[in-house]
Length: 630
Image (cartoon, rainbow, N blue to C red; front, top):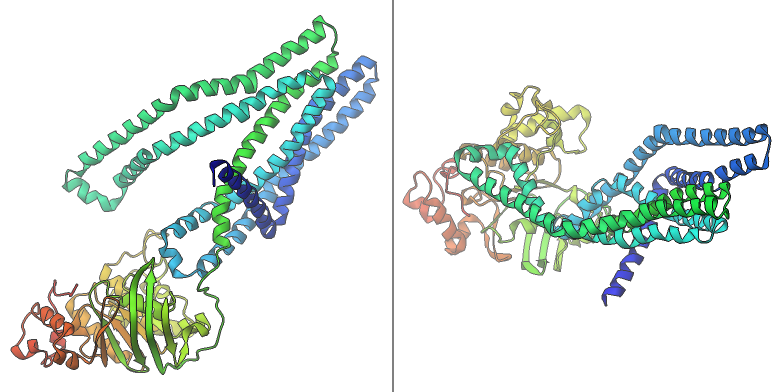
């Protein structure tokens, strides 16, 4: 496709995008569309009325000797109508628009949040999709209204421009030629100026990003220590100087050409028409006597109105295509067809898990195979451990189990039925998870534990207390100013609690404890804990989840030896499977990993290293720092 065809396609898409914006805003708040249309119509009507009709009527009436009363009746009528329009404008800005803005904000973000909640997890891990999502979200309500305003401004501006040409032609055909000057100024020189601004901003972008980064780093607390303990400030200062110099060089590059184009824009858009038409009208009225005073008043007033109408029309047209790009992001996001929609309906899975089977499962992410022909089974009420190097596919396997992704090949079966046949939300309700890459929300401790779980109000405090005790976080939480009602993080509360990484991890683990469901998953639940806290945590996990199907991922093999079954993953598939004792007897990868970790324990016996079983389970759960298998 050549450049001309691509440009035509972009313009056509921009028009469709703005029609989409109009339709979307009408669905959310039709009243604001109506009022924006009326407001723009009355605005152009007033300009044309006063410049093309009002002054001519008054001057003609005075020249024709009409009575003062007749003229005053006309003037008072105009004043009353103008007062009514002014009152309407005040009501719009003071009452209707603020309310409508809130309605648009609520309605649009409800659509956006619902969509964001419903798209599959892979969308948020796709940088291109995520960029479009954030651009769609940014001031979406304001920009949607601006797009509709620009559309009305273009539509009524085009009509007003045609009317202005007709009125001036009726008064004096030659005067229309002067109106062509601001058309040249706006559509030729102003467009060239816009192109220069675009190129200049594009060239400045790398320098401005660097300046913004340095400005941000200089006041963020997490950089303060390094700033004071190292010589990095001098490097930042040098980078800042280079960025400022770069901005200056870019500005210098475009200044001369931009200045000339701006001068031509001003001369054609304002000076030539204002001064030229005024001199032409004065000559016709005072010298050649071929134009009446009423006609002179019309063309001079029309000169001003027409110029501003054309400027507004041009700017609105530019905004229309500029906003078309934003609407493109918004439209693409809202019209995206989810591959695994969160509201997927299907069979009710019930509350019992007899078996979950991975049958020849393969999965590729961005053309890279992560899981390869993997088969495994989880039986109800048993405890399973997933071990292996980083990148072996353990966390991806859990994401497939929770149906954040669907397998590229193969099946995952719950009680003998493909999990894609189940109601997605009811299926996920079977699982409680504690992820390693956890996030804390700016809510109370209790809310961060419950996470919206369906727990009766009267049972919440007891359930949270029990979960925090099992996770080993209860004493710390109760030492906070408001106990379980203390807000975590300082996003919205200056007195919010900022806990250590280990304490935060315990609260995440408590989320899995508080949920009443048949299947519980712990992903590296002790990675930020000290050895004693780790030992106690695993004791509590084993004891409290004895009636559940339990799966946990751990790099520390000392914590998996009491599992009913261990799966060792490597290169996205199961390499070894069995109990701890069976795997040690096989003397394969698992045994090698276990022995390497065992060397880092505080004290071990010959029998211990051989893998015949620990003489003291708690002792074996206490690796020293650095003993974690990576």
